[in-house]
Length: 243
Image 1 (cartoon, rainbow, N blue to C red):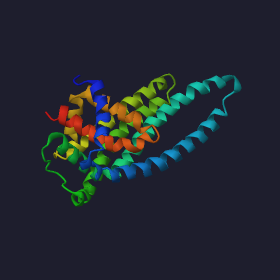
Image 2: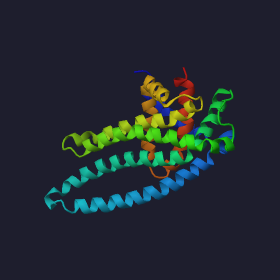
Image 3: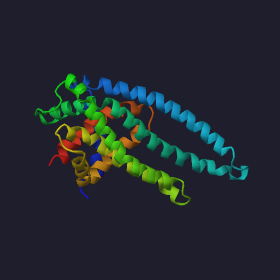
Image 4: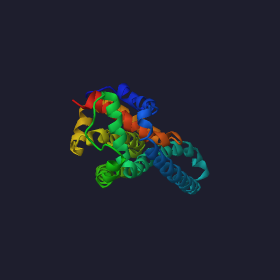
């Protein structure tokens, strides 16, 4: 497998450091606002619901098995964090997709010093919204069969021990595809091309996607992860995938 996990993981931090550049600030506001509204509302509701369900479920466990609560909570918490982090990110990306594409375009021009023949302006981004939404839905449809498979494994005794690892690997894979799609779509490359490019540099892509997947499950940090990931994926595209 080609690439480097550690180098790939560093793209998110490099993307975050570029967000303060004056030429990108204008294109960060709307995705950031969408993230705060989506993550702030849905995660608060989801955690409240999870806490109530877990209390009810654990309340039915006999006292002599009370020790397994210390095992169940970390496993369930990590699994729910990874799954909801991806799903909430997918919702935020559907809403803000044209603005993320515009951010990727401006980031690539900043990185390479060359113009990108793509959206060119807020008006063009708004006109491209229906196409962007369809592209996001295609990624979601690609994710769902794999997610259902892992979900089924999560309820099978013994096999469910590896479920958190599988959720993480799936989240890392999908996060890399989700965000690399923006700079590649700006070059009129198909979703099949995106999957092929990510597979070609699998280690770097999984390193990048893994860090993004973890960050989407961390409160407050997940507000800012989407614009940082868009720029980080653009760096990954420019330095490794665009060959």
